[in-house]
Length: 258
Image (cartoon, rainbow, N blue to C red; front, side, top):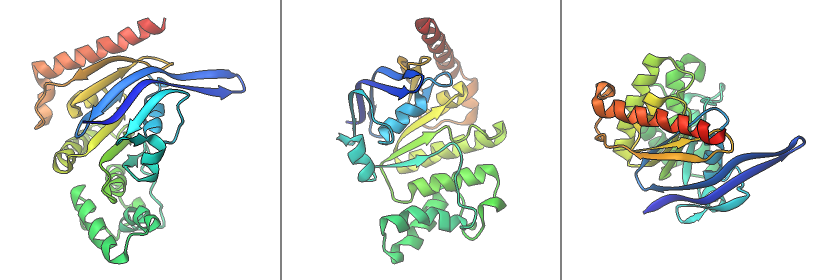
């Protein structure tokens, strides 16, 4: 069952300097429960495609369906949670208050709010930090709070735009492990943007390699790695072979662009 399906998707922005072709002939199916990473050079349209899925950008050609609806219908039905590059937490709200905010906006009953907040904070291992403020938490913990906020209304799809890119490698490795654990427990469909080849290979069931602008898909790699992945799997022959194929896909994208 395809949760997200793009066919011949195109997006061109009209600017004062002329048209900017962001996406061209993008064809992709994402199945329920997939963990799909998008990787490619800066400006290739990874985030733009994610924003199209979220109904935040309108394609200028082709079709896109999300949960059997248009992207705009899916956005209005709250079919996804979105995690941005920066945590984007309000400094005057506690961690619980930040996680609770979308639920308040959506009009959830007050009696339900505390239970939902407690559940998602436990999922991201932040139980006990409900009354802390964002400035009292590390960068990694703030991003986990941001993920909890996106999970709070229990959408089936989680869109993540390079959420760990600004963190150091040790913290990033730890959060990658936690994210895989979270994905296994919730069985959500995840679309994840990254610039890191090891991160893409470690996390994903499917890796989508994109070319320089206009963004095209140069390769779609179905990972043979088991769902249960310790960090040291990155030293395995299978892992290195997938990473090599990703690099080749990125090189092919540059050659195609030229």
